[in-house]
Length: 178
Image 1 (tube, rainbow, N blue to C red):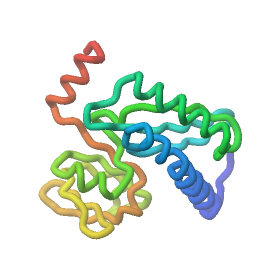
Image 2: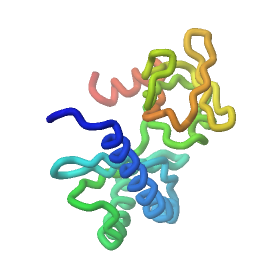
Image 3: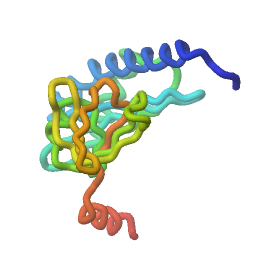
Image 4: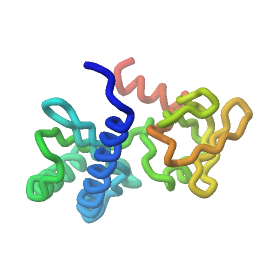
C-alpha cells in the first residue's frame, strides 16, 4: 500500500470520532438504565469485521452475567439504530485494573495512580509517557514523570491506561495461572 496524504488520515480519525460520539449517545443511556456506568467505548473498524468494545463498571465490580445482560440489550438497540456500516463484533467487558481512561473526569478520579499515555503528536520529542497521574488542570492532564510535572492537553491524548501496582499485578498473575 502506498503513502496516503495526511488529510486522508485526519479524515479517517474525524470519521471515527463522529462514529464514537454517536455510539456513546446510543449506548450510554442503555447501560446507565441497566444500573451500570458506561465507562467508555472503543470502535475499531476492520477490513471485514470491526470491533465495538463497551466497558461497563459499577462499585461492586462486574461479573460475566453483567456483561451478558448489557450485551443482550445493546445488541437489540444497535440492530435497530444501525450506527455502524458493515459487520462488527460487539464486546462488553469490565475496564479491569489496567483500565483505559476515556474522559477528563477519569484522570481526576484516578489521580495518584501510575498511567501510560500515548499522544497524538510529539511532546518534547516523545509520543509515549509514563508517570504518576496528578490530576486535571482545566482541559489539561497533569502527570509527574521523573520528578517533572507535565501538562498535556486532553485533546492530545490518543490512549491512556492505568498501570496496576505490583500487588495488583501479582493478583492478576495468580488469576491467569502465572
